[in-house]
Length: 280
Image (cartoon, rainbow, N blue to C red):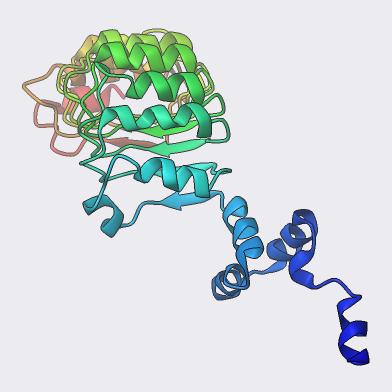
């Protein structure tokens, strides 16, 4: 009995405050060790969950989506910086209102293939209003239009990467909002945005280094506007959506506007002639 009473005078490690436990958790490098840490007790699991900064929704969760799932996940992992909801086709636009409470730490968000995310509802508005630190967002194959892009561009001015691939209702009007407001943007993907001809990138920031614009309806004027920013290092103009004069605009590279350009992808550009290439 004496030995037992003596033992009880010393605090158990599971009763330590959260801060020391967080320091211990950060020292664990192997994932299996981190998983074992969380299985120790509820207190350890809480520390493990609050230390989680990246989350990708698994296929099982995507197929069994219900209206409470996102809130449960965000409540459990409350300090996320990187969240991928890619492929959650059953997630309704309204679920993104949960970011009002949990979006303040998010820096990267993927909504690729979330086809119910539109700018008619409150989804994009919630993202734009409640994710002040957002720097990377993927909206590939979402059902958004120029209106949604406008809301996003005016609120998330610190965007560094933006993926709008296959958002087929976006036009140069929407791209113009990005050019005017997102002056720190370094990478833009508008692949298969077949209503974009390129003039929306007029006055684009010299910070824009990567542009993927394959399968667009670019013409010579659009290409000139794209290159006018002067900072591009990678430019993909492959497979124009229709017969195009984009080759005529490439001559601006030879005038010094493409000084930083390292990679120019012209795959399947059937309407570019030898003379166009010679002028580069």
